[in-house]
Image (cartoon, rainbow over all chains, first blue to last red; front, side, top):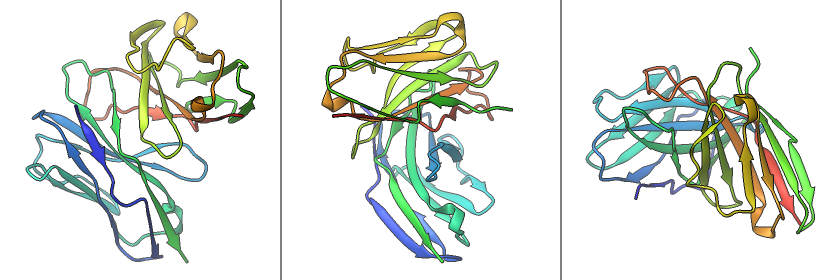
Length: 117
Length: 117
């Protein structure tokens, strides 16, 4: 069975700093997807970034980037130049790759990130 | 374009009562998913609809939970009778297709916080 572990329940940094959120996972699959979702205080879950396991290049989306280490089963999220609006719960999630995925995500417990002014 | 909407945003009920949660997916999205996060634990998959059919309901915890999606539009999740351990946040998500194309993703609602006292 797949598991996702986020070892940092809560983190806080000053605005404009860089912060890295850790995520490790366990799977015997070779093809899969990894995601970081963000849930701001308004509570709508938003997709931040995704990574296909077969792609060696780390995904980036503006100030958000990942460090994907497939052999180590590690998928950390780096937020550069952090902003107050980045304050949120961040969830790491895993999904097996199917030809016809049912989008059954396996989630980590979440990391509460607080950006201080 | 309207996103995924969930009603109510918060519900407090007594043990033994019935509660019905509603999810309106993005128009045109055939796939609808329910997840829940029990306090302090990971988000767990409950079930997946394709149009009005249940594609996968392997995550439903027991027969006190009943999900429907009549007509393939909005979905309801009924808990009857509610127990204390049902407290948590119930998320709904929708996606256009299960085929995992590059930019396909699931869009989440804000969640319904259910408190059973």
